[in-house]
Length: 471
Ligand code: ARG
Ligand code: ZN
Image (tube, rainbow, N blue to C red; front, top):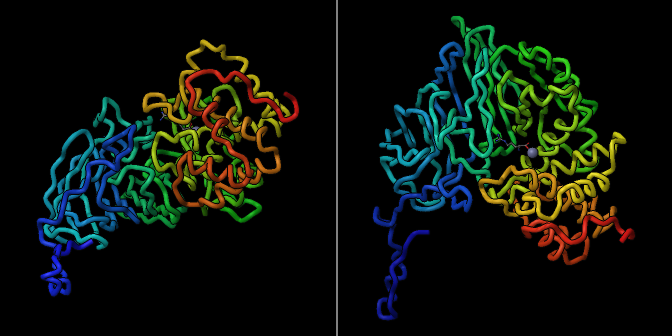
């Protein structure tokens, strides 16, 4: 808001003279969005609506270069602002004019535009850069994973810093175009729809587009040699899966699981409502790590997920995140239960569907298998701490909390909540208190005690997730 003169009654005339903001009114944007777990993640003073990422990657040397163009809107009178990024920047332009820039802290790129940005104004920010991402360590690690034939960007909460500058926090979602040029014979995998490829002079360019709001950590990039499998579900949803050609003994189990993506999306839609995005699929690169990640529309699976045979449960988990995490995203990282508790609960429902144990049985098992003095109970799923964001309790105790909620409100209301929440908050952001308020509205019950017991108490609840009428 433009500053106005503070006037006394005696100078009421000057009320009519709105004073234009002077340079002194423009302040630097904060170096973080104010996340209590990760104070420097994301930035203040602007919001991003779109990322256009245009890169060239050479798998032989891991050299990545290109430009990212960011469409942003200032949310304050801005003299300076930050992006989060780890590679070497050679040039920054804001609204066409060269801007000065400097690095600070681990991943802060500080940009001073030639002309300050007025609150509410649009800015086009072009960042040109180059680097060998696997060699760049921040907080001692890199989320850029090398494979024998290429590389993958996947990590949570950090993964963007090694391939595009961003406002790196899930509270600021944007649409994405990802266009990457690679030597002929390689493929590029990213989010959304492959809108086309072009080839010239020995290089092929892949153009990907995610047209729904996407958190920065859910953007993914993989380069390598993949077997591609495409299909369309009965509901007309395009499916695009990719398997590294060198998965060895895990190849068949990976395909036996990930090829069921379309079927599992349809099955989950029965619980969560219509699938929120315009494409779906997964990719299995030959990475040495063990995790999977719900990268939007195109789930990342490490081959180790399939080392014991087919694993439809992990596919269900990552697809459940498309509703719980990707479409409805966290406003703050401390609410990670909204993602992991529900994705694990979807696995409980799948187990029940497959006659491998009911959700109640699995919840009872989690409760019984951890004695009261087990450190498991010291993690509060509703506020686990940055170091415990992905602790077992966030998933398992988190899912038991959901079973306890189901038993408290009854199946009819429970399944209305499970479907209503991602429908009502589609493409948005949310917090645990907001979810509790929603569950209270739908159920007509006060749920404060239940949430405190299961999510916010660092001790084993005295009573397990008792089935209704069974106590
Ligand atoms: N959201 C992921 C999941 O599906 C967690 C990944 C955490 N692991 C990691 N290495 N960042 O459970
Ligand atoms: Zn998960």
